[in-house]
Image (cartoon, rainbow, N blue to C red):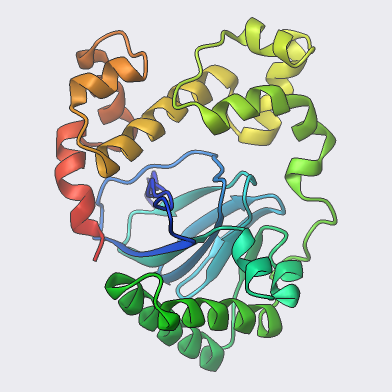
Length: 286
């Protein structure tokens, strides 16, 4: 099987919205890249065509067509997918959506990262609801229909779905390893570019550089310096897809040494230049 880097689309919920839903599709051999990362929102991905591996708090799990994966806010996750055609709906919603809508059972269910696989009948129904949700969202995210369909989807999954692996009893953000790294993790949460050296990051966490390095890689699957670069490139992809900043502006905003250096790193990571990415990313969003 030929490996190809998957790329988690750099969505973030627009100001004033409590959820977003998008449809994403890739043809065979389309360039695609990802790295271990986290969001400040809950994320549910409902796959149509997929083949590869999901890395999350429970370990790793093989994906197949029509599977679903859920990642709670602040939990790290990653994908490694094959080069075949792939498509999915990605639904991101504020953690407060569950409590605000009185979904106590769903709030309890959606506490941990999960890989879900339903029977054929339930899967078909869930995908139909997701399609309706996407159509309604595109018309009016705050309509009663949109809000009701999201409530229906989350309630349905909480009552009917079971994870392929039993959830760990402790979410990653409450683990001792994560807690030790939290001062630096908070920088990645709130800044598009983190410019600390390994020694400075270790000192911020009151750890030795060698221990910090081992601990960081155990959580994020990349060493600190590589993750820092990927974080800046991920931020750049988000800015390219959601703003009108020029490539030059982005390169200096994210502290790359020059626009040409930024372009070279971006192309190495994502397989296309920033300009090409900017013109094609929206074509993937139906």
